[in-house]
Image (cartoon, rainbow, N blue to C red; front, side, top):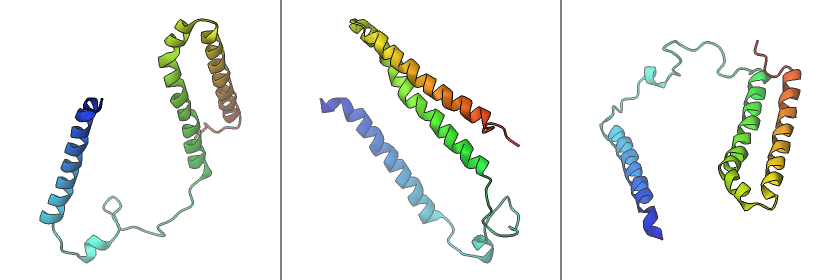
Length: 125
């Protein structure tokens, strides 16, 4: 049973070794002189002006939350879509019940989408 996972284990060991090797080589052979120029913050090659922190508009956070909300839909929809054919093959009305459940789920998401649209959450200024 575990022999099926040998390829994955080899891949994990190999990628970990490559990552450790790359970091080690950079640490060993990289320059180590600290200068005043290296210690200043880097922003597109320009000296930064003003404070390092600024207030971000709420619209950025709202967009991120909406993206996560509607992205999680895929987490539930994809496994359902993959296994839906086997649910239909079960017969005894289970396929219809599972289809109706998914329609209700998508309807709830659609209501949330319309609500966010009406509130202007998708308008970027």
